[in-house]
Length: 323
Image (cartoon, rainbow, N blue to C red):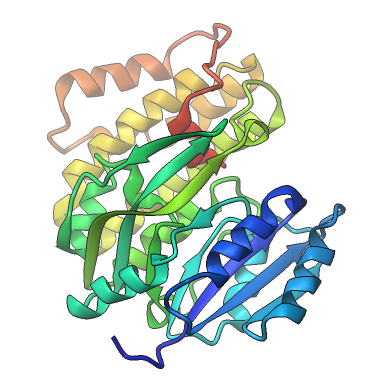
């Protein structure tokens, strides 16, 4: 590994005083010392700003920007604007990392001459640790990794990866979305040529009760609306670059459209709104060999009537996808 390669660690901070010290201490304990920590305080109203300021005084590698509240996407974008590293990673301020998190990700990236390095991780929920291994280990092309988005939701995670800074260029997070990281990650993947995945649990992801998906209200409907926009944009972006993936991505899109309609029954008005939006794309199933039963289910969903929705608020995957 080149000893002078610097990593920019971007951390959005918002009312997270309870866990912020643990997060920062885990980074300062890294076996790889060449990094900068960019703390973007997004208008916190608790003790988070003061904690950030104290840590800036502790270590010259730490910088803090205090800004008005604009959401995680705007905070990450501010971090990208001031980042000076050769590599970039994103850590959530309530999470922590193993001591060799940076070293192992950089080692695997350099040895394999890759553009992105991906690690396994752990969940921490109510003081119980769950282990999450990766479905694929080794070197993979960006096209194959993009294809894995359809079968492995972990491929789209933001925080278990280190990226070459040159990949990001002018790409920024979509502000105003609940799933801004999903919009960002696949675009960076498509800019890469080679990705390496290691089965080492280097990231510890904290599940908090306050961040688990809510079953009612505008926030839930906003999540579904964002998911519709993300899936639609991703589909057209991917097939433009990889036309031979159209069949796979189209069937995945239709399947997700059906799920979105079913999940949109939080209110009759939103249910009809989602059907109307998705209905604008009803003709995409024509002229291509979409599975007959999937096509029929799609048409049935578009004609379905409103019924109240019951949601399991403890679904772990939804929390990650929608946070």
